[in-house]
Amino acid sequence: MSPVSAGLRLLPFLVLSSLLGAMPAAAGWKLDDVIGSDTISLTLEHRTRYEGLSDPFRPANNGKEFTDLISLRTLLHGRVKLPLGFSVGAELQDSRTFLDNDVLLNSTHVNPAELLQAYVRYDGDVEGGQLRARAGRITMDVGSRRLVARNRYRNTINGFTGIDLDWKGGEDRDGLNLRALFTLPVQREPNPQGAANVRRRRGDNDVVFDTEDFDNLFWGVFAARDLDRVFGLEDVRGEVYLFGLHESDSPSRRTRNRNLYTPGFRIFRKPAKEVVDFQFEAVLQVGQSRVNATTTSETDHTAFFAHGTVGYSFDVPTAPRLAFQFDYASGDSSPNDGNTERFDTLFGARRFEFGPTGIYGAFARANLISPGLRLQVKPTEEVKAFAAVRTFWLASKSDSWAGSGVSDPLGDSGDHLGTQIEWRVRWSAVPDAVMIEAGYAHLFAGEYIDTNSASSNSNREGDSDYFYTQAKFNF
Image (cartoon, rainbow, N blue to C red; front, side):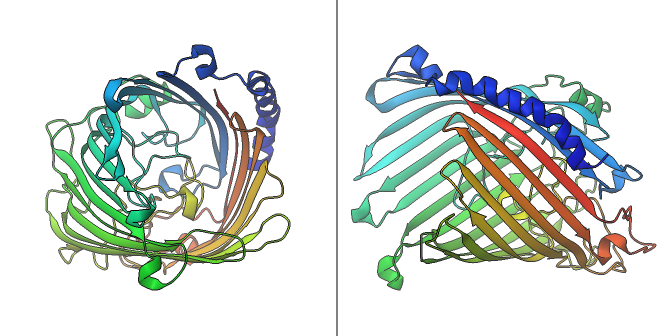
């Protein structure tokens, strides 16, 4: 069964769901309206998604012609305002899957009945700017979201326990933004190293509460400001940052023992009509790490990442924007030289650049060279769409294809992974209440996938098709 025909099976369900969801939303119904309080806020978000993948490229799916999955994610977020600028909040996440047709389930798909956030927050005027301080279990977006992100497409969301201080100045401070964070990354359970039946437990949506500990620390400092006076260009903004990740084995979990320092900067101009927008980000990564969680030897770690975008928005009907993109993420040049050169994207998101994740997730920000073109259009206020084409090479032929499990340590399979075409359409059926979305990606297999090399573990499935359709409701 093709992913398109399989997706069509679910379209009546999505249409019915959107109509049911639109009924209260069209009447302006929100949980906050029911509560009717200025001090208590409550929001509910639910998303149902169907996704299918033909000719899956991961070795563990060898021999499978088609896999598909239904995933559900529900988020309930409440916040109570207290005197003197303080408030307390909590968010519950319930991420479940059904159907599960030959899908390799992991903690990016399933995390039922979890406390995603539970925090104390302060908002107030400090030194001529606005300070937002949070302490507890939180989620975060930082900068471009390439290194730290609250996941949007993925069915589960990164969580952190700690402190996040975010100060923003006004125009008289050139939009200065200073931020500091010290956290313990939340480890999603069940632990794959601590439960032999972990796949069954995920497939059954078993509830196992997430954990955090001081064997895994993540911190960062971040600064941003408008650069109009520096470059003489209108609406240009710059960011600099430094992140630190320090993890080690604990009694219940083996890790890669990453001890990484990641400094970087970004300069950008946001898209606007009849204006050339651009973005350049460069990141260095140094420290020590293990090649994987099963080894015990640590190696020096030196890696690099760079991203560039140049775009233009036309002032014509449908508001098209055409952009050229380029990404480079270093790979490990030799598996036996005692050095690790593969870039680690930390807690970043990748859907917005490399295509859908979910059961697809063909490309990640590691061992990658990828140019591409993207065309965005907005036919109406309620409809947005884009189409994109990208081609992908390995930065190092002897390093693995990140996110796929395919590797060829001898480098006999070449370096061209393939070319991906993608489209997505979003329809805001009821503004701020009901969103219907559909997308498709086709991967034209390159030599790396198709080559019958004795040193490669590729299942050589050829081209792959991925299709998804989803409905999201906000109350």
